[in-house]
Image (cartoon, rainbow, N blue to C red; front, side):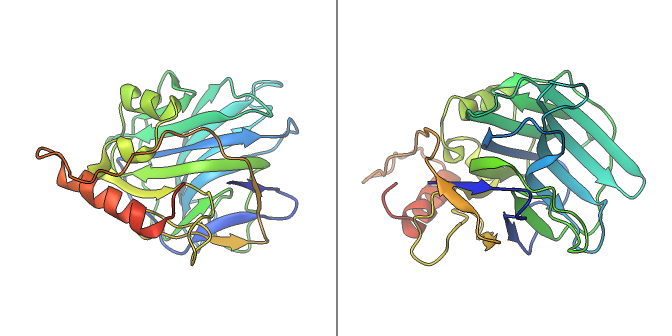
Length: 253
C-alpha cells in the first residue's frame, strides 16, 4: 500500500535526521497527484528544523510557471537564495515517476517519467540539514509544511547524481535497490509491511514517522529483487548488504 496525504490536514511523514546533507545527491519517488489547485505540494525534502530556507526538495506545482503546466519543481536553497529547476508533464490522477539530481558543482536536472529537463547551474549550500520529509517540506515547526495532495511510493535518496539511464531504470518500474546500491542511502517502499515500523527505511535506518495520520492506497507497480539462495561470486558487497537488510526488515512484498 502506498501512503496518501492531504495539505489541509498536514498529513506527512518525517525523520529527525537528514539522509544526505550536501551535494551530490538524488531524490526520487513515485507520485499520484490528485489536484489542479494552485499551490506547492511537496513530495520529498531535506531541511533545517531551525528555519524556513535551508533545504533541498522536489514537489508538484499544478499551475507553475504558467496555468496548466503541472510542473515538477526541484530546488536547492540557502539563506542567500535558491536555484530552481523544473520539468512539466505530470499527470493528475495517475502515477508519475519524479527525480531530481544535483552534482557536486550544483548542476541540476529534474525528471518526469524519465524525461529530463534542460538543466540548471548555480550552487547553493543549505546549512545544518537535520530533517527528512516525505509528503512535506521538512523545516521549522512554525512554518507551513506544504503537504502533498495525493499518494507517494518508493521514495529513495542517493549521495550521488544518478545518470539519465539510471533514472530511466527507476521510471521503468524497477526498485531503487537495483540502482547504484553503493550510493543508495535511504529507501522507503511505503507499503506498511514492517511489523514494528510503519514506514521503514530498508537501507540506512532513516525510518519515517506518521504525522496526522496519512492514509493508504494501492501501490504503484514495482519490480523488486528476488532473494538468491547462493549469491553470484562477482556480486557486489553493497548489493548483498542491501538485499539482506531488505529481507530482514520486511515480509514478502
